[in-house]
Length: 242
View 1 (cartoon, rainbow, N blue to C red):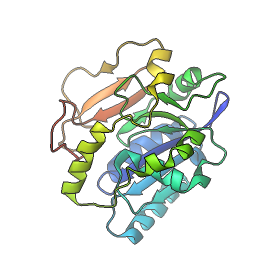
View 2: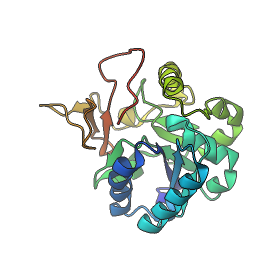
View 3: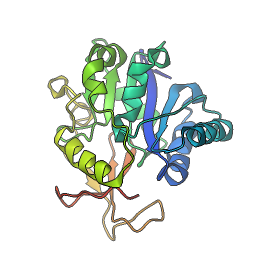
């Protein structure tokens, strides 16, 4: 999608345990904002049966009209989409930036307008983080930068679906959070001159109908929402349930 002078691909990773509840909200919020289906990329991982993954990917393509939904043989949490695009760089053709989401994100109707206002107007930094640390790996990554750091991206690839392995991976990824983002180049929050993220007041809500405690984060400078688990601090093992 053309965002100012840049062509932006919006990317997300989901998994067998999440996709039925997270993707409808995520996909619909982007499509309702006028994001073309061809400017959305989704990695679908966490399946023991790759044929099942491919069948689900085809069903989602048909349902949402999004052509770039990739059945994956790995389960690399939010890094999955980055791994798949550097392994298959044709998905990055004709794009200058990839904006990475979690599948527990969605956007409001001012998102495209806000992103257009805050994206760089001339220089091309390698990354623009959602906010100063921690940014949860969310933000814009220049596509040539991602290809240049392919080996580092690939280091996060995980092919195990074992629950204990995934819990350990979650802990590891907390320590590796934002390791691909170069915060020196700034973030959307500072560009918008916003100094606080707004947390929804009142009871904690889980928008996916599950029992996991989640805190609803709202980044008003991008009109972007995230339902965050593990918000009460670092713990091991960390929760990986929706």
